[in-house]
Image 1 (cartoon, helix red, strand yellow):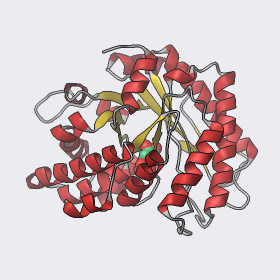
Image 2: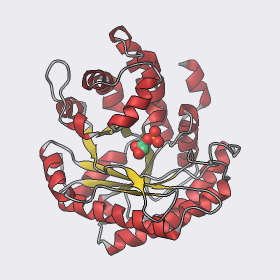
Image 3: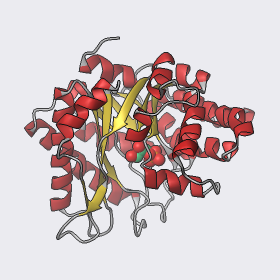
Length: 341
Ligand code: 13P
C-alpha cells in the first residue's frame, strides 16, 4: 500500500467506497447506548465496534476506512486481535479522531471552538505508529439568524488548518470537517441560510488551509450538505442536491481529491438519497462519498440491541446501509432497493 498522502486520500474516497465514522467519544457513545438501555463500558464499546469491524462483506466491499476514537485505535477484539489488524485485513484504512472536542468559545456566547492542538504533533506520531493513516478534526459552526460570527468561523478555520498541516507532516491525511449544524438550536433556519453560512465558512476554511500551506491533494473535506435545519425540513431531495453541489463548486478547489459528507442528523434513508442525487447530478471534479456515523450505524445498533445473539442481525443491517451508501456514492441508489431488502 502506498504511503503517499495523495494516494491514501484517493483510496479513502474512490470506487464507490466511503468512511465509517465510528469515532464517537466516550460521552457520545454513552448517549447512543442509552437509546438501547445498554451501559457503556470498555467491554460493551468493544463488542459493539467488533460487530461492525467484523462485518466482512461491508468492510471489504463498501468501506474504505474507519474513523476511530483513541480508545478503539489501541483496543483489541475479544480474541485478542487488534482492531487495527481486523480493519486492515478487510482492506480498509484505520483513521483517528484527534480533536478533543468543541468547547464554549470565550467571549462568543452560543458558539464553540474545537480544541486539541497542544501536543498534537507528538500524538500524531503515536497514532501513525499504531497504524492510523488519516485523521479527523471537527469544527462546529452554529447557524441561526445571527450566528455564526466571523470571529468564531475564523478561529475554527485556523484550528482546522493548523491541524491539517500537522497531520501532513506526520504522514497522515487530514479530514477537514467544518460542520455547519443542521441539528443545533434553534434549528429552524431554512436551506437558503444554510447555503449562505456553508459557502462563507468553506471560503474561510480554504483561505486558512492555503495560509497554513496545506497540500490540497493530500486532504479530504468532510462538509455538511446544504439542507434545512432539523426543525424546518422541507426541501426536496433534488433541491438539497442542487444547492449542495452549487456551494461546493463555488468553494472547493478541484485539487481536493474527495468530499465525504457527514450525515448530521438526517435519517438514514435521507442521507443516502441525498448523496445519490448529488452524485447523479453530473460531472463533479472530486470523488463524492459518505463519512457517516449515525446514518450508517443507527439501524445496526438497534438490531444488535447489546446482545451477543443479535450480532449477525446487526451486521446485516450495517451491511445493508453500507451497500446502499456505496450505490449512492456512484449515483445509482434507488428507493426500491430499500424495500427489496
Ligand atoms: P454523523 O454522520 O452522525 O453526523 O457523524 C459523522 C461525524 O463523524 C461527525 O463528526
